[in-house]
Length: 140
Image (cartoon, rainbow, N blue to C red; front, side, top):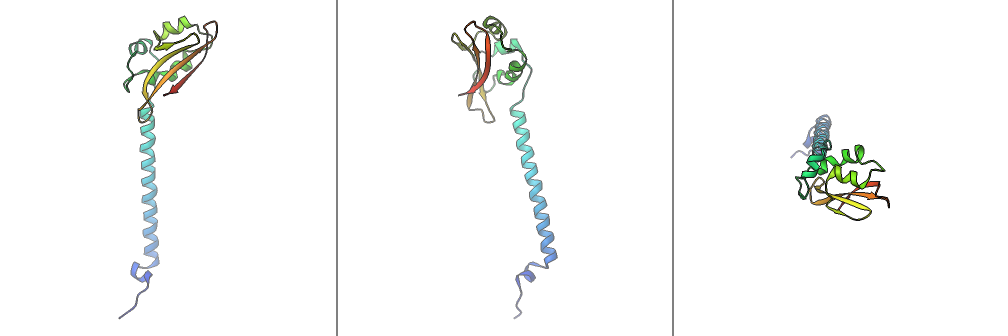
């Protein structure tokens, strides 16, 4: 009975190296495809739209994932909610708040995130004169 070595059983070293090289290429391609799909899902789930005052106002009370406010909030914060804006002008722009106090106005954004299970709220901070000082989005 003839004895064989492991290399002889698997084939020549050149064949073995070529197989490992193909395996590495398929692994890298697979990881790139998986990463690309994940990135596309994140971009799709965080789609932003331009702020629309009428659409924002009509979304009051819609706390589910279909609330369009979540996709408008970044444009709203960057282009419309400037420091020094009065409480009255904020309410004209956004409609009646979902909750408010003397120094805060809050608007519900609905469910947000990649897996929409957490609610988010736009919090608008006001100073003692009722002028906007800052905005932030909080998750709860």
